[in-house]
Image 1: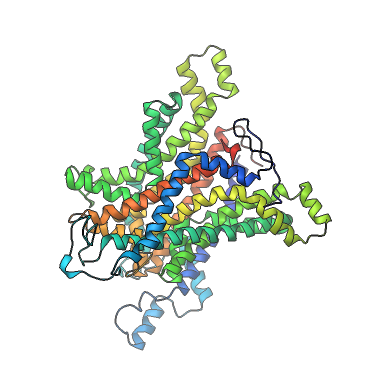
Image 2 (image 1 turned 135 degrees about the vertical axis):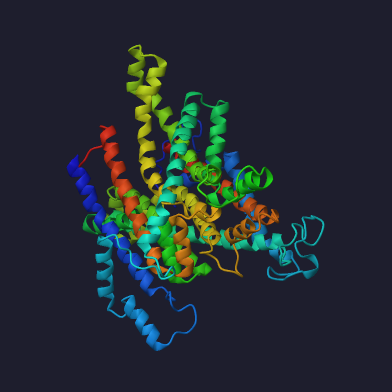
Length: 299
Length: 306
C-alpha cells in the first residue's frame, strides 16, 4: 500500500496524524464508530461459534437422539435449544448451517470482487475499443434480472454448495467491475502513473501495483455490501429449495424447515432466523461504518 | 426525445437477445431432461417424444423455432403440465402477480414518501426515528424471514388473517401485500428523506422562500417535485420486479402467480416454463428501465439526451 497517494481531503475534526497512511487513517476512523466496531465483534463471535462451536458437541448434525425427539428448549441439557422432529440437535444444525452461509458469503464476495476488479481495472486502464467492448458486455449482462440468472446457472452447475457459489459469483462480479473501472479511468492519466510508465513498468505491473491498490478504498466499501447480498441470495435460494440440498444445510434451508413446521414448533424457525437477522444487521452497520470511514466525501 | 426513446429501445435489443440465448442454451445443457426423471421409456416412445418436442432437430433449428415462437408470444409447451402451454400458464398466473404487486407498490409509494417527508421535515424527531427503524428492518431483514414471522403473529397467535392460501378474499391479500411492500417502503422512505433534505438546501427552494411563498407551498410544490427524481428512478424497475411476482412471497403464502411457476419449473426441470418466465420477466424489467429513463428526462431538465 506504499504507493497509495494521500489524496483524501483532511477534515478538521479527524485530521490524520502525520505519517499515517490513508488506510490506517480510515481504519482509525472506523474503529471510533461504536456501532460499526461492535457489529464487527458480534459478527466475529457468530463466525467463531459457527466454526468452533460444533467441535464441542459430542454428536454430529445428522445424529438423531431418539430419546429426545422434538425436545424443548432447556439451556442446561445436552440440547440447549432442543431437537427437531428427527431428534437432531437444533443449535448444532444452525451453527453448521452458518458455516455454509458465512463461507459462501465471504468467499463468494471475495471471488466476485477479485474478478470484478481485475476486469474493471483492465478495461478502464486500457480504455478505447477494449474498454468499449468489455463495458458493453457488462451492460448487456446487467440488463438480465439477476435472480433468474442465478437460478439458471445453479441448475446448470448442479444443486450443490459449489454450484450455488459459482452461480452467485458469476452474476455478482458486475458491480465491482464497474466501480473499479471508474477508478481506473480517473487514475490512468495521473502523474504517478505516467511516472511509473516512464520508469519502465509494464502495463500489467502498473495495473497491479498502482491502479488496483488505488481502487481498493472504494471497492472495500462495496464489498461489505456484497457479502450481505451473497448471504441473502444464498439463503433465499436455499429457502426456495433451489440452493443447498439435504443433508447439507444452511440458514436458508433451516428457515424453510422452520416455516414448514411453523404450526407445531416455533423454535425451528426462530433460531435460524435470529442468527441470520443478527448477521445481516451487523453487516449493514459494518457497511455503513466502512462507508463513513473510507469514503468521507460520500456524506 | 422520441429519438432518445427509440435509441434506448434499440440498445436494449442485445440485452434481451443475450437473455434469450443464455437461457436457451443453459436449459439445453443442464443435466437431466424433463423426461429422464420417471420410469424408463422404450426407445420408440422416447423417439416419439423427441419428435413431438422437436428435440431431434439440430440445436440451431430448435433455437430458430423458439425465437419464431417468441415473436408470436408462444413460449412453447410446458413439459410438466402436459396439457398446458407455457403461455397459458403465464396468462393464468400473471394477473394474480400483478394484482398483489400493484397494491404493494401503491402502498409502498405513498407510505414511503410520507415517512421520508416526515423524517426530512422534522429530522431526528420521533417520526424520523420510527421511519429509520422501519427502513432498517425492511432493508436488512429478508422477506423470507418477515413472511413466516408475520404468519405466526397474525395467522397463528392473533388468528386475524389466514396463514396462507388464495381465495381472492381481502383477508388473504393483506399479509402478502404487506410483506411485498415492506422493503419498498424502506427504500422509498430512505430515498425520499435523503433527497428531500438535499433539495431543501438548494438555491431554487431558497429563492422560492425569499419570494414569500408560504412554507407549505414551497415544500409540496417546489421541493417535492425536485426531491421525487431519485424516487422515480427507483420506482420504475422496482414496480417491474414487484408486479411480475415476488418468488418468495408467492411461495410462502401459496399464491398462484408466475413467481411460483418459476420455482416449481426449476425444481421440476420444466425448462420451457423456466425460460418463458425468465424471458417475460427480463423483457418487462428492461422495458421498465427505458420508461423510467424517458420519464426522468421529462421531469428533470438536467438529464440530457446525448
